[in-house]
Image (cartoon, rainbow, N blue to C red; front, side, top):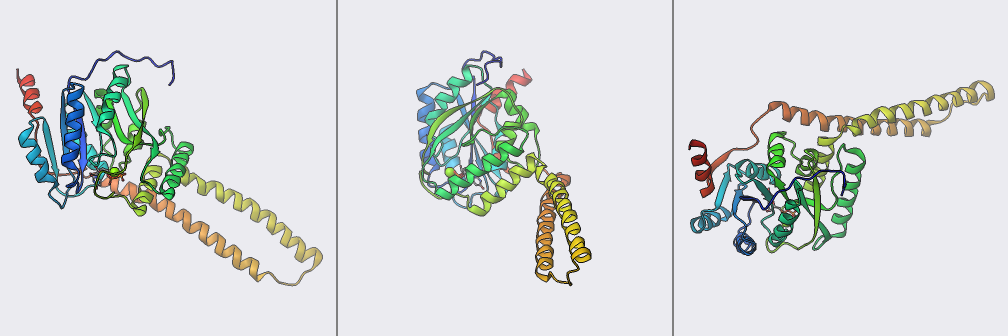
Length: 332
Ligand code: UDP
Ligand code: MG
C-alpha cells in the first residue's frame, strides 16, 4: 500500500458488530452461527451479531430468534419485505453498535475464521480491511470473465478505484461505518459506496469457498442489473459517449457528403446507392436508440432518488444486550 498514508494506532475493537444479511438461509444459518461463534471465542473478541432477515419466506427468522434466545449478543432486524442484499446490509449497519463492523455473508462463502486476519490488519491502523479472494470456487467461467470485465470498466470509468475480486466481506472502523451510513442513495451499489467514502484501506487475501448449502440468489439478469447500477451510480461517462460518438459520426458524414457531391457533379454518376442509404439509416437509428436507453437509465435513477423514500421498513428490531448498555451509558 501507499507508504505515505499515516495510520493511527488502534487495538482490538471493544465491540465488533458482525453484520449478516440473510434471505432464505434456513439451511446454513445455524451452521454459520456455530462457526462464527467458535472463531470469535477462539480469538476472545467481544462481539455482537446483527442478523438481518431480508423478508425470507422460509423459517430463517425463527431460527435467528431461537439463536437469540440462547445468546443475548444477537440483534435481529426483521425487514418488512425482501429489499435485496444491499439494503439489508445498510439496515444492519444502521443497527450496529460496535466501534468496528464486519460485513459477512450467511452462506459461509466468506469464512468467519478470516475475521481474525481482518482484525490484525485493523490493529495496524487501517480503517477498512477488505477480504480479497484469490480464486473463485464454484463459479462458472462466464461469471468469472464477466466480473473481470466489469471491474475493468469501473476502473476505467469511475472516480474511485474498486479493489478487484472484492465483495462486501470487510471490516470497517467507526469512522468508515458512519461515513457509509450517511450515503442514503437508493441506487445502492455497496462496493462503490465503500470505495467512495475513502479512508486508509487494505486487502487480505483468502480462498472463497463454495456455498455451504442452498442456492445463490444471483442470476445473470440480476448481475447485469447490478453492473448497470454500479456504472450509473458512479460515473456519467456513458452519457458523454453520446456527444463524442455524435461528433465522430458528424465529421465522417461531412467527408462522405463531399465525396458524394463530387461523384454526382464532377463524374456525373446517376442516382444510386439504396443499400448505402438503408445501412446508414439503420445504423444511425440503432445508435440513437442505444443512447436514448442510456439517458433513460440515468433518468430512471433520478426519478427514484427524487422520490426520496426511506430505504427500508422494519417489522421489528430485537436488540442485543449491548443496546441497553449503550442507553445506560447515555443516560448516566
Ligand atoms: N441476501 C440478502 N437478500 C437478498 C439476497 C441475498 O440478504 O435479496 C444475502 C444472502 O442471504 C447471503 C448474502 O446476501 O447472506 C449473499 O447472497 P448470495 O450467496 O445469494 O450471493 P453470492 O454469494 O452468490 O454473491
Ligand atoms: Mg453466496
